Image (tube, rainbow, N blue to C red; front, top):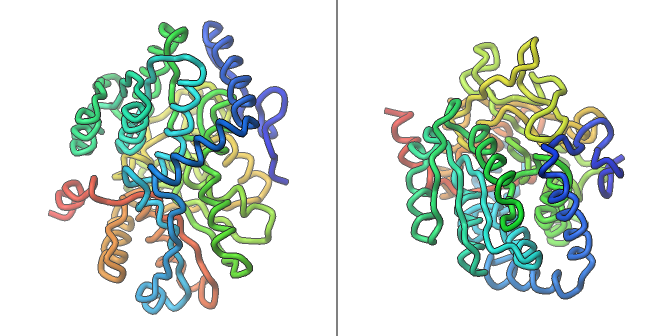
Length: 389
């Protein structure tokens, strides 16, 4: 059974919790209380709803993908989060958390980013609401997502390169956590996915569930048989999965198989990982026999993460959702498929979901499939061109 909220220890079953430095515990408790109060405050909810409607552009449409449906032989619907302001679902959570930071009297926000979409979303929300913003980003991701780096800088945000480790999302989270330990009195850390210590996984899910709630309202009685979303940390997936969970609909999360599961260079934490502690939460992660976290790999910076949100771990173990994987090469085929049939260039992250429905076409015949198109692919065009050259 899905949980309305985690238990008193911040856990979804055996997953989640609050494994953080002692100096952060008061801030995490303050954040939990502040979110609980804000979430039942009609004034806060009205302000959030107004910004989601007038600034973000919600509700995002559900699009009948007729030519893609004709090619695959079953009905495909696309939830167009790529049409949200800043080009991805990340703005839903960023607006909510920056509003909360202002309510808490924090003048500064920080964030981590992989693909740059969360960084851009946080920079946008901070500019809108007048807060100082700094974003930590791995040097490898800065190189492959240079367009989003420039967008953040245009919005008045300082982008801080992270050179430790592999220079990807995991390392950016590490540096953001270190900064927060030393600045917690004046700073709120806007975590971009359903990861991290309690209350972040629950709070981010609540900000992102607008995707699924909105879809249910738009579809009425015309419910899909299958809902599909890509999974890195898992915020877009849990945002659409949670309202559909328990309705008898097949929920499918698509992880990054990278260069192939057999090569060891992938980001399939749920499929190939085991339970452990990462970034303050207990979840499935990629680790060796000694418990050392292993580097993930994906052509998609947003899926290049060795862990996953704890609620996804809970969903997998209870059978509320199933999780599959798609390789880098297959995701590139997903980009081409959607671009040529529907005139939409998806983000590399979202292309994993598109590629999976094409790969699984045999089992999907006669069904209606709703895909959460979590972001647009403008940011990835140069990388896609290089990958194909």
